[in-house]
Image 1 (spheres, rainbow, N blue to C red):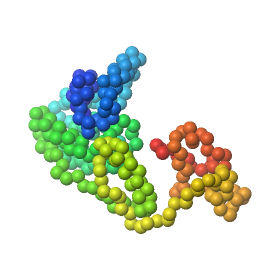
Image 2: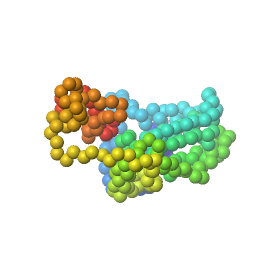
Image 3: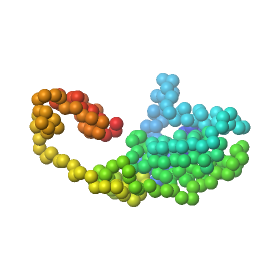
Image 4: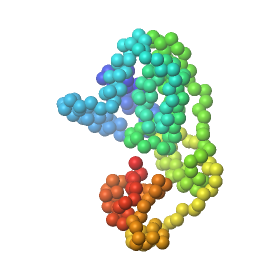
Length: 255
């Protein structure tokens, strides 16, 4: 978020290299090379007259900084899935509301799907601290308080314990290999155990189709309902789905 107050909305190389490891865990060991590639990207963007989301954020930030008071009134702001917001986006949202203390923000850092975003709730505290300094020195007459407590909600009402244990196993691996990429939270708890998953160790497509159809082997195609979906790794795998499963709802992990 510091980039919003820098010239042209971007950090200088020295500032980027000095960023703390927890603040920017990506490309920790090769930041000089990353910054060099970033400069090439900026050059190409400028030559072709392009702009990206960060340019839009910087432009809005500059325009907001010139206002003595906001021409609108937002009393409260509720945000969900904030793990997919960049710090700059959240910092900008804090400047569009009458009182940043009237924000209600929720999210799960283990569910981030935006590439390049490593959000942690501890970083959100830093944003409020930064906003409080700006209020003290700027034109806004409000006292921004850093949240004293972040509430952890680990009772899950959507999925049964079997699914939650599987998900927690994946999260445990992520925490082991990328310990500073997201917050450490207690494992989610379900209300009931649920059925055990069916694992097909070796199965032909035609056999799989019969298993999914049950007794309706040749009477009609497989119809997947609202609670059934085929998950594949990527778009390439999606394009290679066999004809027998072509009428099913197929989603990539990212989707």
